[in-house]
Length: 142
Image (cartoon, rainbow, N blue to C red; front, side, top):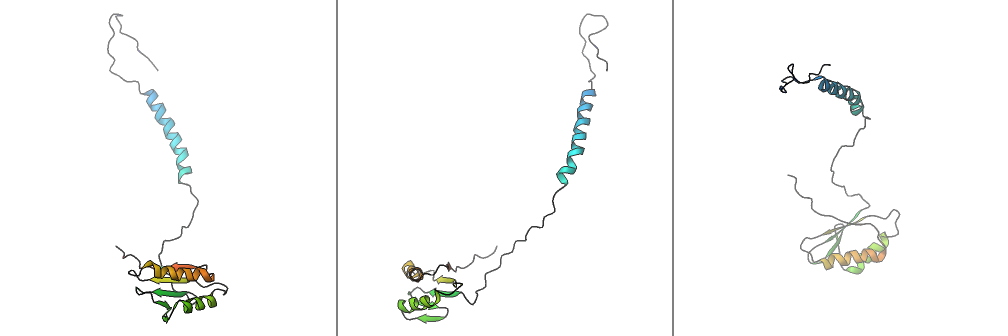
């Protein structure tokens, strides 16, 4: 490696137009070696089979009970109209001690006042039903 300091005449400094590329080549070789060593480590992964996304609507099981409330406040047990709140409580008292306890699915009319749905929820709470869910209309895709 040669370094030229100053000119031959010893007077004025001359501008050198050549660049010493040896340090640049050394750095590039070191980086190349580092990348060659680290690339197999980065690409070597553990094979894992991830679950696929799928959205399936829940099917109503026979042990699920659908309570529908229309906007007039009438309550339907599956498809049977219940005449009053006492009939609802009596049916719920019959279902509450079952093991496993069935899921009560409340389907409320969008125009029904909340007080009617609240009365159904209160009746479920009063007899000790632990699993209560709401059925809603899914949003359209796209």
